[in-house]
Length: 113
Image 1: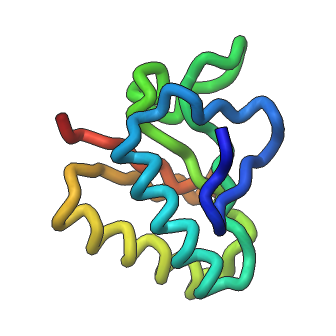
Image 2: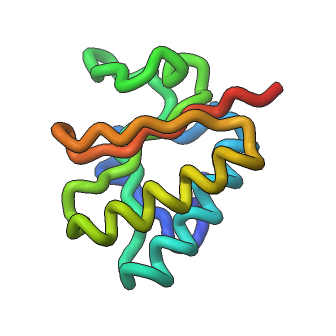
């Protein structure tokens, strides 16, 4: 699978094959925004939950309906900007999100059909 501009994977173990296409489209748009705002790619650390022994940040990973995005490299204001953008997106898209600061992650779940 080719990655959209502005999106990279933490390592080769991250699986995006089988992730809901609507969620991947949202990730692509957020990646472009991330590149524009911070000058670097948005890093996906967990996609579809089929890696042996990998933790589930959301129960929806196993169904390809959640992704985890790395945020520990962002300053406080940058993280606030990214979370606010996702929050505004949640108003018009069927998503839920969780700011998991202790693990340096932002988890986005697709709740649409």
